[in-house]
Length: 224
Image (cartoon, rainbow, N blue to C red; front, top):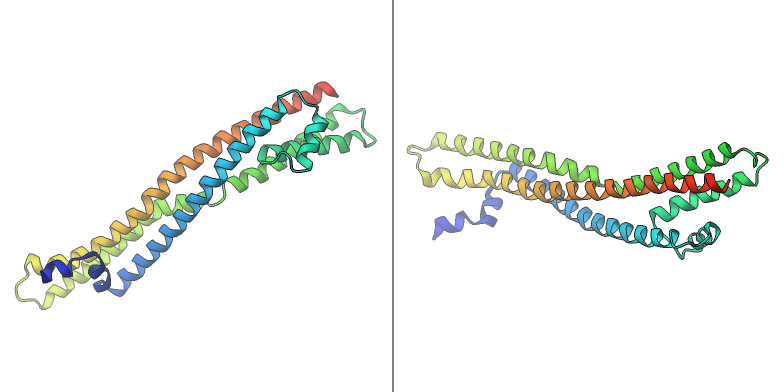
């Protein structure tokens, strides 16, 4: 009964060396931050997809560009794609009212540059914290492995003063060390899965945004 108590999860953590405990705490912090970013990014990408679908339905429903531009400006339509459209349409209208209204290339280039700048801002926002998830997924197992190696070193160093080493004397130290690897994997696996999923979702949105920029540029070219 005493051996089982000493090998419990909480007892192993509390009895681990200070370095291993610091590593465990660091991995737990990384895990908590990862889960916070996972939930945040899931909600952000889901909202962005819904807003993109709603804007595309409104845009291709046959309404005038000026009416759609007004809806985006007053907040009736929102989302990354709506803001990209608003930036391009707004720059197009400004350029059309300038002195070079007869220059079609000037109008289209101004609108395209504005949409590209807005596109980059939206993608930066959608890709925020993905680098942290990638780093957490790739680094956490090695951090946990370092804690395991350190703990096993201490366990075997503690056997130097023992006359007869048995499994009962070695098991607690090794078990304490292996917990660091387990916590590292616990932090890494969700981060890797979430990073792959969110990266794929972000790439798909990026393709939709780029296609819209090209299609909207073609519409402006025909109207010019």
